[in-house]
Length: 357
Image (cartoon, rainbow, N blue to C red; front, side, top):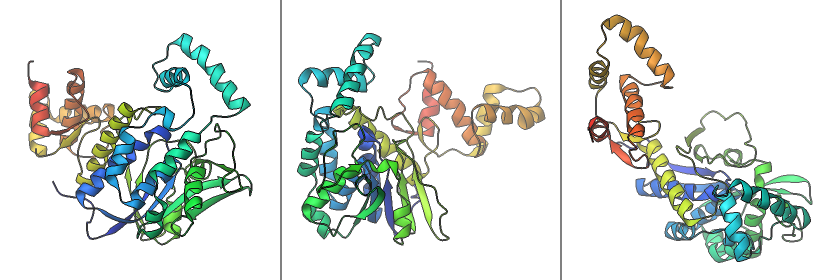
């Protein structure tokens, strides 16, 4: 497969906030690393800031390990019963009765004292090595909001002291439901209130080739006009990443895999909407496949009216007959329950959907 990005360039990477969905960004990093894509700056908001610290440190193996073992108790202080019950709620496994019972309990905690995130503070200190950030050739920018000073902040962490690096990473992720405690003598709020996907800070600091990693996270995305000469490559989730508070190892491993596949879709131009498909077949083959399945009586009407109608119905806005064939094949694949979270050769996918078994 031909790589769509340029290995001769050095990129800057913007990481969106999204809570437990953050494992997705590690999967994207795995694919970029595998493809030999270099970067010299990372901007992150909330969990994106924490992942950005790991990218600045350059320790992909450690990032995979910590996310593969993530759990709710790494983020907030709960007794075993609370962790079990709230875990069910955040994972969407709670029944209606459980939800009715748990929501007032959770609301009471937030209203009276906030969620105790001492474990998150400890997790940040255990995982992030400030000296590696201070020495790194990769610039690390984070976004947060200073409640004390009443202003949004875009900060470069590399030149800060050890304690301040830890504090500002936590400040970027300081959700309003957390127990309010000062960091370095000031109070902060989640950077998602300012910019949940901070491309702006990278542009302001002169980076022109940017990869933006989306997670459909909490907060607002700042919109501004890109200067001439700046290009942004977007990587977006192609599957559900679960809830923002679903901190479980199983979900994290799944999200990492989705991030890896979505990055490869962008890197190598994989086809498909629900599936990840490596294209090898021609448009002529695709048209013949459609003709063989539909066997139209009036060819002109079929080409000029029926196929465009199918394309509109299946949301095939661009591409050639190949994309329409693939959209049809994906429907058949989904009906047969074929695995979506893997790469398929187009010939293998067509064979699988046409198999009688």
